[in-house]
Length: 640
Image 1 (tube, rainbow, N blue to C red):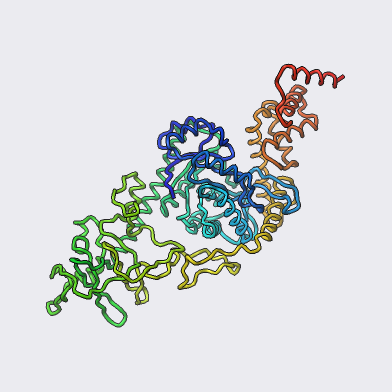
Image 2 (tube, rainbow, N blue to C red; image 1 turned 90 degrees about the horizontal axis):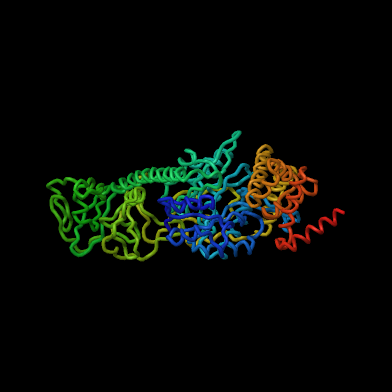
């Protein structure tokens, strides 16, 4: 995944500040607010400077029961192309319900609503994500959302749900740590558990944002400073994996540029703190690896280490190709690196030997020095994990990344830094393949070590072994239909669960989502199993969000109506669900007021009527004097 660095959400209100802000590696723009043919000058200048711009969609509704709208997908793809973006992001949410699928009126939420974590919803979501992936020109990443309400009878945790989604579709994940905190407060979910269950290698980047708590409910407002608990979750995530990018979101109540800069600095510190914790964990792992015997393949002029290990039934001596003395015998204090193979030196090759037990011909001990390998020296099998002398460990790389230190110039043939202990290991779906052959020059082969039951276990997968999962996969109970790989079955050959009955699943999910959304925006009865108090909180939040957005897309309405605007709109929203976009909603609101003879002030009512007439037709009304005179004459005649 491309390294993005530290970024901020681009918004028109802070466009100038973002351009001048130091240390901004990339920005994210709401896709629906960008016109591909008329990019804002600020975004165009940022792109010319080499700043990456990622479009962030909010209206696709991938979690809805319907298939993604082709027009919306095409528009999103057009924005990706116009911005030259390396990826595009959307949400795991539904934003509309009803329609032909459920034979009910089409309703718009105007906001992101949570998807039920059930098998049906997962099947529908996976198919929708695949449709979107096929239609978009760049990789897609999807974001976990904040929720005020919980679906009854959910079958998975958030981490399990995201793991299954990424596993079945290959989609990237945009992890919002502020949303994890929101769900912790509102739904009692443990952020650490969610992070532990996530496929960390699938993370595209991370969102960070602020909010506020009222009456025991956390509101993900994106209009307040980032709180400490959110930064703590970010640190926890960074202690598990190096995030490719981290971005600060701010949508309203924009502070001074200095405050935004300070928040970005806090985010960087949180990531650095997590990187230090990751370094410590990797160093501990490297220390455990250093305590195991480590050798390198036999080659002309190589030395051989004689290793003795305790095996069931007695001691067993193995002769394996060894490290040069500079790595195998030189103390760590001289090399500055852990002594890989130190355990072997204590138990075998470097252990003091009795005079009556001279070294074998062709072996190397501290007393005898180095000799050439004797004919027939055992060559370790290929396919085990390797470490090249002089390579950096993953801990060192993490330290460099955390503190901005340059990476060393040495790379392998593919241009990548060679892997060391603690670096990337084979992942889910990989199978170690090959034939028994001599290891490549410079490879270090980990010897078997004694297992907990007295037997032997491999330090790394061997030739032909199937790579097991790094952590247990989420268990979903007896309803899990897809078989898990058995011992000996290559994970790479496991096929995704066939999408059988997705049409029926769409209908079931559609009916459930329509019932919930109708209760939220149309005042119908609350579906069984939902918390009625929380449904009321969510309904009021949706109405308030509608009022705020309509005031932005139609700023004349608050001016015409004055203080009456918000009260009037909230009353309108209680019985008039949104069925189209926000601009259509603004026109419908004006029609509602005019039909009721409001507002009471005659001058305000005339201004509202003029505003509605200017925008309700197929084209704006002409401003030419002759046309205006004709309209005034017609109004005068009608009054007579």
